[in-house]
View (cartoon, rainbow, N blue to C red):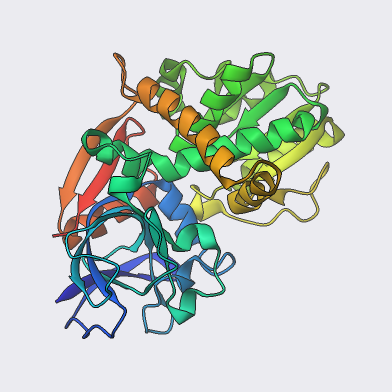
Length: 361
């Protein structure tokens, strides 16, 4: 039996668990038991942009109006009808928020394979690749929980930092990051701080300000209501992890043409999402990490890009798990816990110092 969390696409707080009899595998398919999955604000972004960015398409629910949330993590092959994939293999990749998943492995290498399920053929390759852990340079058994929570987010953080530097920070040396307590935001701040000469201002709720200050990667941390403390007549860039339309308007109206670039990354404030039409200053541009990765692959080659991200990842992981750790892992078990943890993430009440991982069974 497979239990899956279903989410109403037009009302993200409406969820239910569905249990189905396991479908028989076709030749060439494998059944994987996801056994360590991360639930973060990034997953709320997937739900918020599920239709516009095709996140609901990865794992179709088969029910009109209902979606299955994609999550990152680890799984083990429980059954195989593919000669190139062994039962017991451990995999890293993109899974449905469920306790079972069926893949159709294709283009196998020693490092991994892609899922060739027909409904995924038009979706971005970065989400369709599965890594074999025994050949994965990012993988360490003793840090799997941190990998599940931070690895896909850090890749995005690394690519945002690279994109900003690649564009000369659009002529600004001050960057404003909203939802500063989110993992993707502070991963970006960590990378930017290593460069020097860049002022990185974290914007967050009053309740999370102390946490953000304690990270040590922001030049300054301000509560959202203190935005006016940032000088309005100096060039800046806004990197928006919150998706809060009211905050976006405040920033555009305050800085106007001194806002040299407005970068939309996430949607953690799902109750205040909105477009960017009619705002003063530059039109908000959606950041799509795979596009920057593709650019760098063409310039450097895939191996060089992965090596650079790996080097950055090892440095970041050492900081996150060091003597004064940024992250405390909290484990949950079973799909009912998955439903409750998703609701907590959606509400915005989650403690930013806690990382939530799920063992579905």
